[in-house]
Length: 378
Image (tube, rainbow, N blue to C red; front, side, top):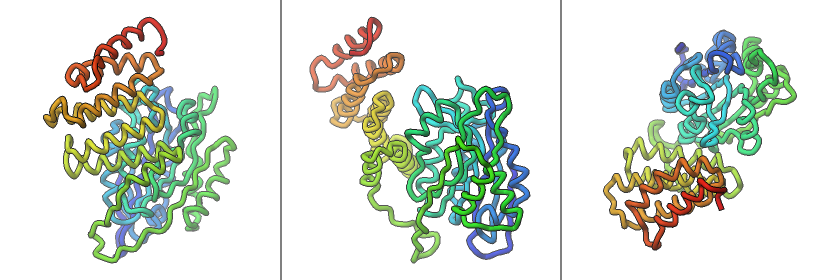
């Protein structure tokens, strides 16, 4: 269900609030996410954005991740303040080890096709002007996602305010959890109070309770005031140092999300297969290496090689050979046997097309592939 409310009557730059309540239908549901929407609907739209005029869009139990992405992308184009309120459940894709927001049709086996990858949301918000985006979440995480969060966090880019909580799934409980944090926010607003986001977070967290919850309160500095017309684009400095600094500090999810955001920007600006988009694909591949995820790094390097070949770059082109060599090297670091076997056929096909300058690379690959069927990776 989609509901749009527009509250006009003020000439100030309006705010935008996107309310997403999503959870699987049936026994896979860990939280009754949509139960918070009537409560939030009773709140004045201006309270949701902190602006006199506001546009509010609701998504209740959406089915398709592309639909959710389209709504997020549309909301992210707003020039004014953007608030995203998300109630739902997080699950981890066990193949790629990526967080997903489960949707109505999500099951463990269909997650990659029926849930919203969290890095999609991170990528769309990362390219907004710093300090103009606030994410408020009330989430329940399954066991795998909860463990992932402990070491990686939610992985949003810099310049985004993040408030809310993530709770572990209730053990041996047949009842779905309730989004008590967001309901507490709504109750505070309905009382007439209008606290700043940090104070609101403290009050709502106290009302919601749950000692096991992971509380999130990450503020952002105020946005830099523009000196030109509101429509003028901001100058963009070189993002590579900041991304590498995040990776070097162990904030691998943050670094990957920022790189993915730049890749999406180049895809929209220059199109699929452009050298600009391929560059960021290769940056993501190297970030996966730094994060000690050789399987993902191998997959991304292969994708980069295929993209360059699609551009009709020669098989002995240094960039093509380099991409295949790096994919091969990362594949040799994989200790997950099923994952290594799954990636091997595509790598063999690439090696046959791009033998590289190291003699016998294809034969070495084939011998190692044979060894996967007889014992552990050496």
